[in-house]
Image (cartoon, rainbow, N blue to C red; front, side, top):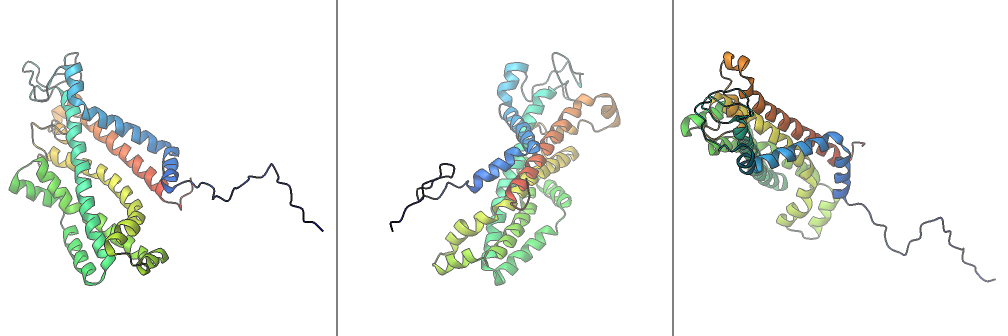
Length: 307
């Protein structure tokens, strides 16, 4: 009896021996992030603020005609007008021009500080989490010591010794912030190094450097990305607070924080809102947009959360 082969069903997908294409993890994360409306709104706002701050010299010279530190002596704390759309400060400088320039400094401090201290924290946390033992104990005790410093008192001490400047502010932020990503990386490594794929890589003779870069660190990046995103907002608020008190970035370099220091008395606060409301609004929008992005990244990177 001859064997007959069943006829192919045209309604069923036909495979030629190849594995169907699977969506990569990066595409899946991107798709989840794009579906989050709040995160996309935050990303759009933040992108606009970054572009406006980045091209502040071009925008101000082409539309306003005022330099960053240029003084209009006839207009001191002047109200908004066609000449100065957001008025002037106590020195007669155009508020809108300084607002755009201030975004460059505030965002640069936040982003630069996060990059530096995340790199340092990842390095320390990777060493502690991979090797464990006495190395882990020594590094974690160092982390405990650093985290015992109160941020405000330490920052004020640094400023009192070295003076207010961008570099001193960044140093204070980096010095006190790197233990957080160090603890995150260390905790992830302690969990991952007992997994089967790490044991298989170790049995295959993979060295420590390759093990950390190719197997451990990529699987520990999700909480680090979310933490870094949210820390940018925290640093912007910290810079604004210190600059408002006069212990951050000093004049004439504009930041949103030291522009708020114009409202240093009740009369200005009540009668001249154009001096403090615009920088306060910029800080609010920036922090809110970054928080939206952080929440969106957390939802997109966590596979346990249903979309």
